[in-house]
Image 1 (cartoon, one colour):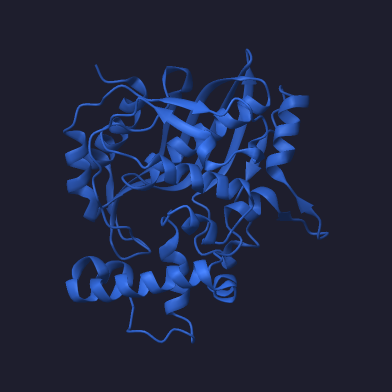
Image 2: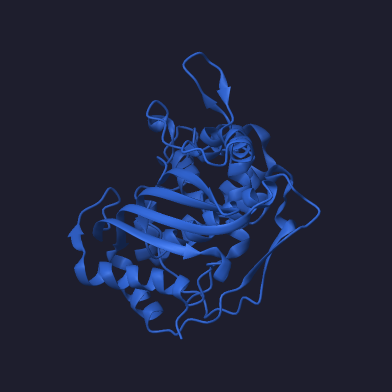
Length: 319
């Protein structure tokens, strides 16, 4: 029997492959896309970490905690062996006047097509990561991704130069006014978009309290179905669990609303392979009972139990 939570995602994959429109895109890769799609995940039925392929939960945890710290520098991620944001920071370095290595133009695509170039790419990426971790000045100059999620969530700059901590504010409002229709956090700041390595894909989320349960709805302007969406589902489900715990609530639903939901043309084979697999039972999320505040959690305080997925499926990232 296919678990309804995982079925939501598999149905999305099938729908886009069958009904999507083929479109050009910013990366030059090409996508098959639909506009406007919604999935609903009952968080009481199991933690929605996909089982038809292994999804690296440790990376999801460290990325979410990075957001919650208000951090925008990849040094924290690299210190937790998390490489999912490297390409955008690396691109800034190789396009700078300080870069002195081989030409890395169009490195995101060429690294997947040319074995010799790929070797050079890996060597330069290794050099870049080492410098970010060990050289404070280099990390400050090239490790930052601009005013991305962490900045907007925790340090939104107002027109009067005041700082708004949206996460702390929404938690306080959930506790004080659970019936409020204003339990919203926005990452889309039009003034800051030009300074971001990647404008926020998950742009706005809203909480809803009913019958002692906390639900969350995310509006995501753009979703890479094969690589990105599984991360987003697990990340916002985890965030809902963390905030529910601090607010003394149970969890309800995670509702995922996507604007441009797309599969990259060079992911078709991977998606079809995943669709050929039978889902397995979903894992259980385990949080450190001794902690309450979402800001006190570290990576080792968040785990999943009984996660026995099918093997991972590799696919190139479009930058």
